Length: 237
Image 1 (spheres, helix red, strand yellow):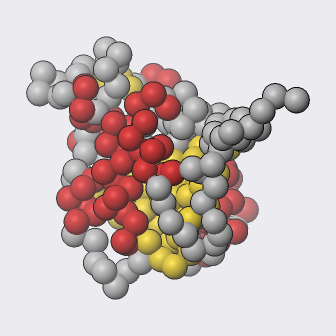
Image 2: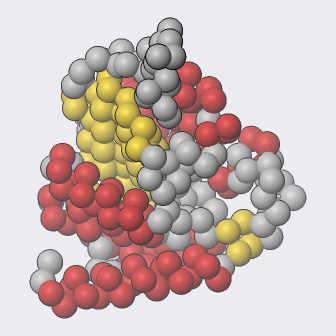
């Protein structure tokens, strides 16, 4: 990307951050908050344009570049902030981002933001249930990098569907492992059972959990992921 393209990207990115502070919607009567419909938590009273912090978004782009990811999947676009940063990385690696957003109002805004940033060619957005997208994913198109930022209550189901679709050295980045960990208990327990994976918690922003496949031994069953100094069976000095 040239300098003007990057300046435009940064302006759009800043605009989306501002949008996320101003937009909200009424929760439809049909939405089941306990199940995480529309990305909701049981305590939510409105639907917000939830976005990750800019530092996490920049890290996503860095990880795309670091891994050279070509096939990138995002679960939960909202109005497109994290999508923009994934797509920026994809433009630089020659890759492509597939993302999902089932709430039509958010999906429409995300499409506009992606177009304004000049990244429409790098993004395909599905307004479908995430599990439907995963079930229809072509087996001959392994996924290099996944960003999971959808309904926390279904993370374990998403992981189960994702694992067979990952490339040999796939990377899964999961948001909200710090602030909303209590809704992700089943998912975290599943992470402890993963073979041929490395699971790492990063205590930044909302808390990111990283899962890398076929790169080493999974220590998660032996340590507290969120406080590795508290090892199983360890004694106080």
